[in-house]
Image: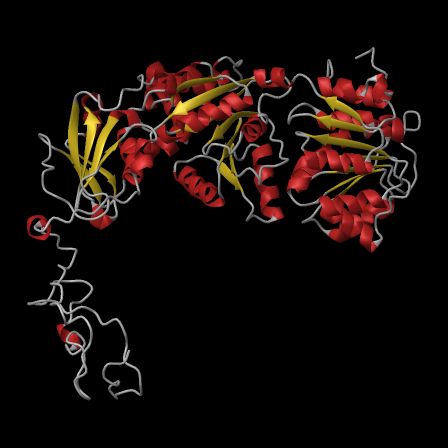
Length: 640
């Protein structure tokens, strides 16, 4: 870095942190064409952008090698979350330590009075979140009249979180001649509009080298059954034994559920979700930084802006919604030349979505299965042999070691060492046979050419509102198969018949439980489908191939109106229709004060109930009109 024009305090700080060279974004902001200009930078997480804008604003705020001792802020950095703001403050603290910088933070959830006192003492650099900064401006405890540089970090996230109005208020409170540095992972139209309003002749910088940064990340797509999703996560954590790992879930409920499961199995884990207070979040992050916890379970929103030291493993328990989120999650590992692993948990129903995410992110993933219990044990045995305590120099423990050998023997001592090493580590989980990876799927078959198959009967039918599109994923998850292994699905009155390829039928045994109360049993031959059915979808065939079931499921079939269908089918869930009224009895006839239509005169108890068996004899049709008049008085005959 000798060829770079850096202030001596900053160069010394970088050297003390082990910087041999700068990243692409750090070099770009120091280029001659960027000197003194507003800049709009797009850079991914982990590209070193915090140090980049710290170096970029040095020429605006430094007076020689020192920061001027004035009571008003010279630089302002705005971040979307509390954790990111505190992280930025820590980075700028060591970078400007030798320059005599006083740094104050203004973030939500912290003591307002403490922040006000820090501002009153005179801080040259202020770091904060939009809402709290605006609060200080409105109360008069923050004065930006001397501001020379303003940084918007993760500008796209601040707009996503609804901070546009706060940002406009803050930027309008700063001098117009300030320098504005805007950093964003993406540059959507909203960011372009914000830059147009508050930047002058901004230099657009697209940081290069993100592909190289993600080259330090090994992507794994783990194929699992639905029932083994959590067990696969546990075995991944045990197999890699990362110094720090983060597991991403889609919802708070998923985070809390997985945290409870991990706690029961002995993992040292903490959770980050939106329901936690700032104090709880701070304690959780501190536990990760000092080693008391090694696994963080978080949602995307709750994990924004956190930087975990030694993060070596990222697990996507729930697939991200888009490719950008996949890169953002994964970019938390593999930083500064370190290696990392990003593992996607993929069930058979999520194969195509996972492939789309990887293609959109332009990364190659190695498809495979989760580490088995034997794989984890083998990895443990290797770690025992490589344990540093075995190669450390002996000290005053020699006498005790000799006593142990004399009393228990070498083999007994070694076995005790292995047991002590394994003690406290979660036991690996046994996994079921997993489905093949997507690229190993058989070629799609022609419709109607399914081949050898076995029929199964499911304990649900139309009475239980069974549909092919509801049953398909449950069958696939239970047997760990894809839809291509399922042939016809015939939904009947009280049960459903499913055709499964002979090669995959063995996964279900003679009987399998799809979920509590829903089971399937193997049939010795082909079911009898000759009996006519009644109602929507009865007697119809669904194919298990992709999109076929979704095309047919839910469409009503034309009801069969054969005269003998009720006697032959024997449907207990439908009341038999009564005979049509005789010709000439359809209209009510006047019969005096007590006269009425024949089916109106029948007492209520004689009418057919909506459910249950019909009464003996012809069922009386329901009246079309209610009588008018006072309660208890009959209506006038012949009037509706």
